[in-house]
Image (cartoon, rainbow, N blue to C red; front, side, top):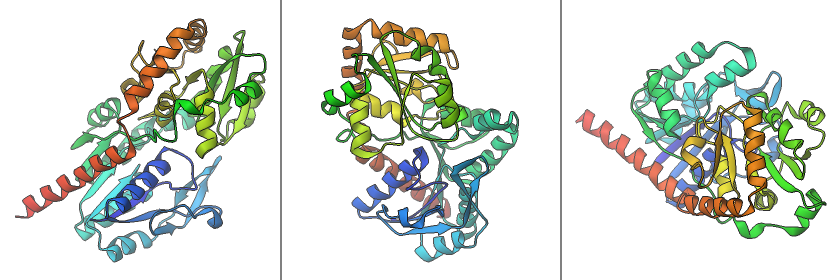
Length: 373
């Protein structure tokens, strides 16, 4: 198949949309298909090197107040690239701005499209501007409603889409690299560096942005015998460093370095309530680390409460603190949760999820052919 992936973000960006688009392109190449990626231009073109296929970059501007996120500008390159690639199918990754243009181009060219829902943009609208949720859903409904199929990453996301009038929704989760993220990478030297007095290491990994609610870790930082480690960067970084002075901020980490940090944690704590999936939860589970996460969105599918970790009411700092305290006092329970978490994700490889995605493509193409006949 000739596939065009139109994505709102792509490496060197570090986020869920970019990572999933990269893994999709890699898998398609491995399976003998011919992908092309269309993505916003990055600030530093020299960093644009880690792609398994050709990438067409569309002019973009940084999002005001959040320069790590770039928004594509109107461009004729989208339709021209889709046509030139002679695409059999168009894959829209987290469509909103660039993806909407990709959907319009696919419709004009008569090419079927699969839209992958990845970001709770309505939730972000509430967080950043306190309004605009309705407008965000109207935009999402227009784009996803025009697609032949929408793929939701979790049961909660699927329900949200259907409740807002989006049809033809199917589930498609995310893979995790169980070779990279594994318990054997636990590093005693790193643990001594981060917790010189033998403290319990509680980690957060992700963007440092308002919607992630990393501020909820304040109560955890105050627990005796606990050291909070925060990995990531973003616009909230300076404020969080000021409000969480006892936490260790490690900045952005990737690859083997990130995997070593994950495996060296005692507990992984995710705080954001707007996750449609939450890849870092899977990476922690693959690393054999028990998880504490909000009982909302994607973590509801990932965390088996009382078996692989604990689910807490979203936005409740006392519940989060109590959950960490309970695991701090129960090393055997932490170990059991970690083993169960690793077992739960061992079959969720990117190869397995990539083959599932190709199955969705084939079904959509078959449906189009049947309708045409």
